[in-house]
Length: 333
Image (tube, rainbow, N blue to C red; front, side, top):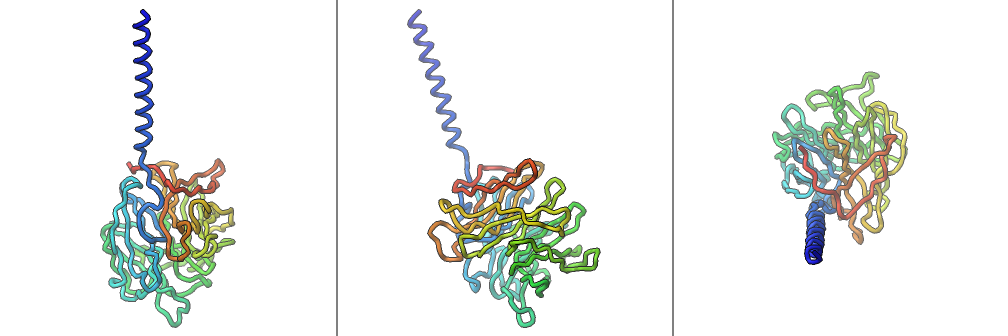
């Protein structure tokens, strides 16, 4: 009887040890993206979901005269990324000479439209540049110049024509929110993306600049409210960060609520110029952004990272915790 009892105890202990080992093994197999999510100096990431694939379109982070092409990256799980080199190159956009940056992309009528800033113009009476459009049949390109000239090549409301974001509202209207030099404009795009059209009040370039705005606008809608996000501070410094506001229309008004993404001196500095992903049909949100690795002082030494983004019961964005681990693998079903 005693021997039988001991054998039963041993079997139970072994079973428990096997269960614990299986649990540890399972935990060890949890796939994480890690940060940065792919190698190389990249910044200003535009993140999208097309079908069941995640796409990230960043700026190639280099001196302006070398910043003349863009790479794309795709993943089905946020962990394993495939590089698509030179999806857009200045050789296919004849008016672009330098400073090709901050892409934004949207899909419409079976085509993919990549919007970009170029040439870093400061005087629109002497310089050609601004926001352009390229088009492709596939999200990986190759993208070709759509207009042969900038879509917006002038400075309106003192906003440098850079850092554009494309937002499609529920009624099908496409908007572009853009601007540097501390000024933010919103425009309505026409149906074929060849120009902009006035708002109902007759204004075409509507200023919606919130307090603290510097550049890097992003817009999304959640529970009937429009969220405008942007970057503050100096892009070369550790204080670069992301703040946001909430409005009732795409044109606001927007009153600054607070900072939601910033440096962590133990993880990385200069966390900013981001984009946002929402898994369709869920309340899962991710923020994709660039930051500077610890110890790096070169302004162009930036990497692309991803972390989770959450909302509280009032719809406010809770401050994002930047990590080295990134996020768990997540497929789009």
